[in-house]
Every structure is written in structure tokens, then in C-alpha cells.
Amino acid sequence: MSFAIILPPPPSILEGELKCFAFLVLQQPQLKYILTHLSIFYAMELVDDINILNAFVEENKFCLLYIQAPDCGLCSIMLDKIGKMAQRFDNLHSIRVELLVVPEVAGAFLVATAPTVLLFAHGKEVYRAGTFIDTMELERILTKWSENLT
Image (tube, rainbow, N blue to C red; front, side, top):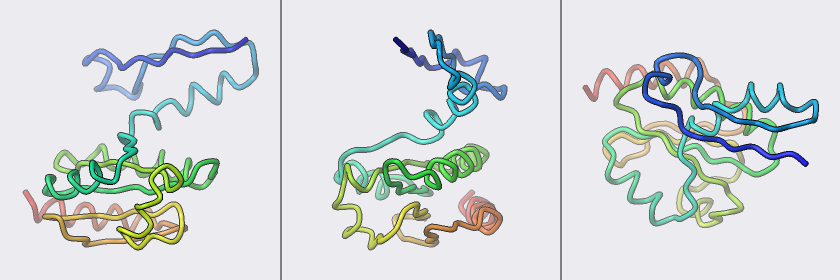
């Protein structure tokens, strides 16, 4: 039997590389995999309601929406990379949603593939990338918009 309890870290830990504490009782070889991928749980908040998502975009001056599909390996890899990147921008608010959990996202944001990254400034879409997301380009655009909005 395997189980994990994942708790948020105390504030002093947030400054380091460790993103969360995990008390794991696991007698399987996946322990190393789980420990190295725990940061994705805290990279972005997961939303399961289109109304919350729309309010998030409207209320935040500068935000990133990450759209993923379940059981998508590329989505998991990009979530980790983009989540860590997003944390470096103090004025950027980020959120994620799964296409199968909130299928209305596809129609509301004209998304046909996963993963997809949408960047909003003052409620308007300013950047879009899907499937093969160029992280260098995304970081350049995040830097540009972050500086313009401060």
C-alpha cells in the first residue's frame, strides 16, 4: 500500500528550491520520480470552473493561463518548466485548467490542442502558444510585458 501526504511548506522554505514538504510512505521505485516532480503541484493553481477562470482573467492585470490534458506527458513537462518560469515574475498571476474537466475552455478561448499557454494583460490576450511551446520566446515576452506593466 502506498500513500502520500503533501503539505504546503513553511514560509522560510519557499526561498529555497524545495517547493513543498512531502511525508511519503512508499515502497515502490517511483519515490525518486515523485520527489523530483512535487514542484508541479505548487507551480499553478488548478481551476475546475469556467466562471472562476473568466473572473481570474478579468481581475488580474497580468496573468498566464495554462491549458492541459490529462495523461499528457508533454503537458506535465511543460507545466513544470512554465510554472517555474512564471514564479520568477512577481506581477504575473498564473493558473491552469484541464480540458476534460472544463470542456467549455476550448470554446471560450478557442483552444484546439494541449498544452496551450495564453497570456493576458488587462484582460486582453497578448500571447498564445500551443503544443510545442518555445520557452525562450515565452520568457522574452513575459519579461517585456512584466516590465511594461510595472
